[in-house]
Amino acid sequence: VALRFDGGLEDGRLLLLDQTRLPLEEVFLERRRAEEVVADLRRLAVRGAPLVGLAGAYALVLAARECLEGDTGSPRRYFEDLGTRAEEIASARPTAVNLRGAVTGCLRAAWTRKGGPVAVARGLLEAARELEAREVESSHAIARHATAWLGEKRRFLTHCNTGALAAPGLGTALAPIYLLHHRGAAVEVWVGETRPLLQGWRLTAYELARAEVPHRVLAEGAAAGLLRSGAVDAVLVGADRICRNGDFANKVGTYGLAVLAREHGVPLVVAAPTSTLDAATPAGDRIPIEERPDDGGTYLLATAGRPVGAYAPAFDWTPARLVTALVTEHGVVESPDEVRLAPWMADAGLQGGSGGGR
Ligand code: MRU
Image 1 (cartoon, helix red, strand yellow):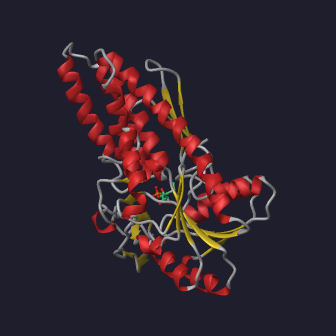
Image 2 (cartoon, helix red, strand yellow; image 1 turned 90 degrees about the vertical axis):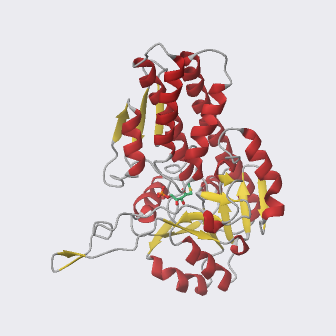
């Protein structure tokens, strides 16, 4: 488990597996202050859209406790402070809509409780725990729907990390792979290394090795030839934000894979919980794309001791027309577009939790 909240409001602490140190070291960070979690989110110690959302929800609980400790006796002041802290958390990572969705959803759920600051803080903890349970259940439902759709397909190319390190439960795009493997199917996974931070090579290969799922890592540039060779039955990826029209953001390189998959007649399957749906963003060109700093460190490049400038977007967006099927906990939508997604978008908005409606 990559994240766990232990204890109650007064004594609770958030335990995070530091993903920057994987696969060489398994180190758990113990966090009692929200600002520490914000820093962990920014440096990708905790990452993956649904897990980022959940970390944000628990960070908000820690922030609410800090606001109680500094209580001035004025509920109005308390709620102003909490609002400021919530915004700091929600803006730690802009692309994955799960983060802002979780923070606003938990606030909304806690707000509806009668009572003052303590009741709201307790409500935030309850809302975070409910979000966690919902996301675990979603990962299992995604696994069931996706395996049914995939049928006899067994050879998959995946990108970034979309397993238990990226989401509560089984993950997103790796969830059906785990389920198939668990049922005894002979799955083969091609793992794109995922430049520049190597989430595929470092994290997906680590997860699959632990679960004893057969896999091989490939350089991103090898994907074109691999897809042309016929060795891949489906490309399986997750998403950080799915727009109203079905365009979606995911780890940089996904768009290229989507174009290649279409060229070679290989289906592109996107797996994500409805907490990744964003009814408020109409299309992909409106998604905020995070960029890694151009400080010469991103690629660890140097020419005669001189750092080399980098173009390092962390994500890209893929048009819906390249998506063969979108799988959420509610089921599968083939060739998603605004009309086909409308019922799910409406539903996500109504959940008032992790879904759309922002
Ligand atoms: O920058 P990261 O490592 O948080 O990016 C993660 C991804 O792009 C995943 O593919 C995405 O969050 C969807 S699966 C959880």
